[in-house]
Picture 1 (cartoon, rainbow, N blue to C red):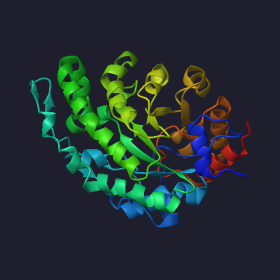
Picture 2 (picture 1 turned 90 degrees about the horizontal axis):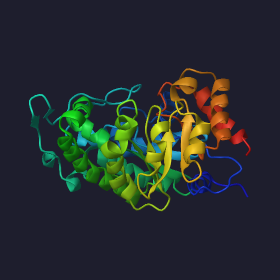
Picture 3 (picture 1 turned 90 degrees about the vertical axis):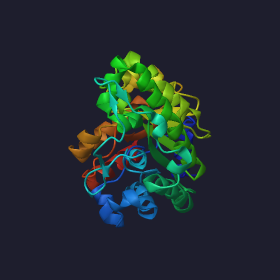
Picture 4 (picture 1 turned 135 degrees about the vertical axis):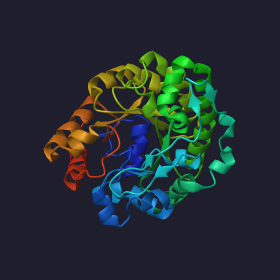
Length: 349
């Protein structure tokens, strides 16, 4: 009997033997093609749970991918906590325009993170509440046949949104104790949000921690700066199926540290900058690898044939779930999205 997409993703998260991995975009999944096909488009889909859920399901409904993935950016939490965010384009993700708290190493002036909104209030309004509601809607409409993936922002990245990432990174040298205060303050918010999404229908949380990238931090800084807060938030949630941590860039030097971020982190999502064969060799025995087909090339800039080559490479290496290496570019063509699914479904282990 053929497996449902939900059964296939569940088996992949449990590292069960499969004839092929699932094709499931765990990162930002929306494209202009999906928006046009469903009538659910940005910017409205960032703000309304009903429109958000419809677009979140579009990767499955329009192209045949094997999950639904809600929320399309890393700004909902930041906006709720006081950042000004421009949410106004159909073809581009929301952009943070200011950081509400002061963190100035040169002047030695640091706002107290205790001034952030209380967690209970945080969960009850703004776009955060719409994402939570979208999980409820998706569970009802697609939960029988598809796993519901919800995207969140990691605590180190969220702290950077509050005070500016540049200031936070600079503070690691000048005022590490102040950095620790801010990351320790955002971790409980991230944990509560992730757990609430799970409690309201999300099967898997895919937390993105881009500021923990080796482009931003030396590999030996990751665990202290970001890893321990991920473990205290995503890694400490109660979720039987497990969660996935995504970090951009060349994550190979830290992929083992990513995999060690708490008992509920069962998977790591990585870009095409990491050799998939080396990643599988390093952590694939115990960790579900998600990715790592290039979101820029081949998915956005390449041809369907190049997409298929990228997909086969990740499949052949032994990735558990075949996804884009990072968020899908909204202008990615329908042809390339279709080629992705076709290539995964044609692969046989």
